[in-house]
Image: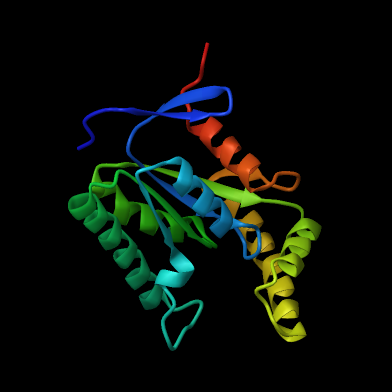
Length: 195
């Protein structure tokens, strides 16, 4: 159980932020990992857990329910371990959730950890996502870039449709925002409303 609040000083604003788990959702190429790292820097003491890296198993099947359930249990186990053994209070998890049900499964695994869970869904114009994918430099071959471009468009459409049916996170449109501006927008959404 968290015993107090600590203050984050950011720009000209300050917020009291208790212990929490932030989940960053969004399609491939939108900047989830970059935003998660930047949030982790701001929410110290904190831990960033990247679902793609933690869930990188072989063989890998995107729609393998057993693999996804295993990933969610692993993430919950890691959060609990870091709470218990390291005294960490803040966590940033990033992953692609295609359905509200899938997101709810992870949240259900995390809720018993007695820490507030908040979810944000990053969106942006498809053209901007394509620009980011081309610029990030991690992809090597033209075939890999083409696959990522097609997959980001596919995931954006899947998430847009799924968001009409259930909660995929509080939307943060990052089309015209850089990483730090996106983090600022998330932190503002977390702050209590000032009168």
